[in-house]
Image 1 (cartoon, one colour):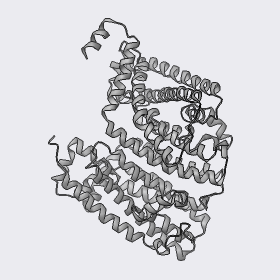
Image 2 (tube, one colour; image 1 turned 90 degrees about the vertical axis):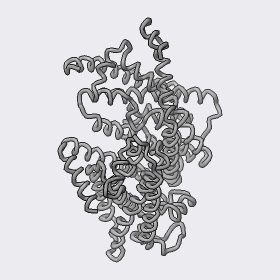
Image 3 (tube, helix red, strand yellow; image 1 turned 120 degrees about the vertical axis):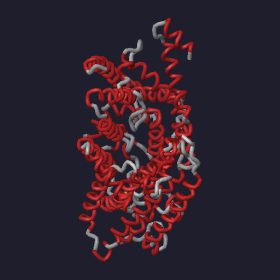
Length: 275
Length: 261
C-alpha cells in the first residue's frame, strides 16, 4: 500500500490512520469467511441447546428474574451473537503473540499508541464478525423459537450504543490480559482465568438476574456484566438506558485507562529486558 | 495399539518436562469444566427440578456424560487437528509411516492434563451416586454406559475429523457435534424438543451415551414414551456408530490430495 506509506511518512498519525486500521481489521477477517461461517453455525447450535435449558428453567419458574420465556430465549441468542464481535472466549488480539515473539518492541516505537492501534484493528474485526457471526444465530433463533423484536427505534439506537460500548469494554479487558503476558510470561494460564471470569460473570452462561444473592449483585457491578448482560437488558427494554450506558462508559474508561498505563509500564519493561 | 500407547507415553514424558506448565494447564482445564457445575448450581438454586429431574439425577447425567466425554477427549480428540495437519502438510509424513493414520493423528500432541476434566466429572458422578443410592442390580449399567459413551464420542471425533477432509477451512463446524454433543448430554433430554430427541436417538446416537441407560440406572420410565428396550441398546448404538466412523475416516483419507507443500 504505497499510498498509506507516503501518508504515513509525511503526516503525523491522524484519524485516517485509525480508519485505515479499522478497514484492514475488517478485511483481514473477511478473508476467512469459511471460518466465520463455521463459527456462526456452531454458535447457532449452542444457542439452540442453551435455549432449551433456559426454557425448561423458565417453565419450572415462570417470571424468574423478571424475564418471561421469550425474554430468556432472546437473551440466549443475543449472548450467542456477542461471542464473535466481543470475542467472549478471549484472544483475538495480535498483541499476545507479538509479546511472545518479541515483535512488541517494534510496536511500542510506532508513531501511534499501541492501545489505539490495537483498538482500531479490533473494531474492524468486530465489525466483520458482527455481520458474519452475530446475525445468523439471531435470525435462526428468531425463526426457530421466536425472539423479542423491539418496535421502538429508540430501543434499537440505545442497543446499538450499548453493543458498541460492550465491544470496547471487551477490547479493554482482553488488552489488559494480553499485556499482562509481559510480566507473567505465560499467556495460557491468563487466558483460562480470563475465560472463566468472562464466561461466568458476563451472563454468557446464564443471565445474571437469576444468580443467587449476594453473588448476583456483585456480578452485576463488575465489568463483565457491562459486556453481555447490560446490552441484552437494554435490548429487552429491561434497563434504565442512561444509567446502563453510563455504567458501561465508566467501565470502558477505567479499562482503557488501565490499558494505557500498562502500555507505558510495558515500554519500560521491554527496554529493561533489552527488547 | 502398542504404537498408540508408546506415542502417548512419549508425549506425556514431553509434557512432564515442563511441570509448572503441566500443573497450570491441568488446573485450568478443571476450572473451566467446573464452570458447567457452577451453571447447574445456579439453575438449581432457582428450581428443584429441571425437565422433571432433580439435582442428584442431573448430576448423575452430567457425571456420566462428562466422564465419557473427557476420556474420549483425552485419548482421541486431537483428531480435530486434522485440518491443521492438512494445511501444514504434516499429514503427508503420517501417510507414509507404517502406522495407521488415525493412531498417529490421535496421539499427536497428546496432552495428559486433560485428565483433570475426567477427574472432575468422576467426582461429580461419585457425589451423585452417594446421594442417589442406586441398587447394585442396576448399577452394573454405569461402567457399561461410560464405555459406550467413550466409544460414541470417539466415533464423533473421528467423524468430524473425516468431515475436515471436506471442510479444511472450517474445523469449527466439528465443535457443534463434539462439544455440542457433550453439552447436550449434560442435561435430561426432556428439556429439549421432541424432534431433537428423536434425532439424537435414531440418527446421531447421543441419547445412548447416558440418557437411555441412565433411565435404567435411575429406574425411571421414559418421559418421551420411547421403547423400553432402547435403554439396553447402547453397545449396539456405539458399535454401529464406530463402524460408520471407520468407513468415513477411511473415505476421508482416500479422498485426501496432498497440496504438495
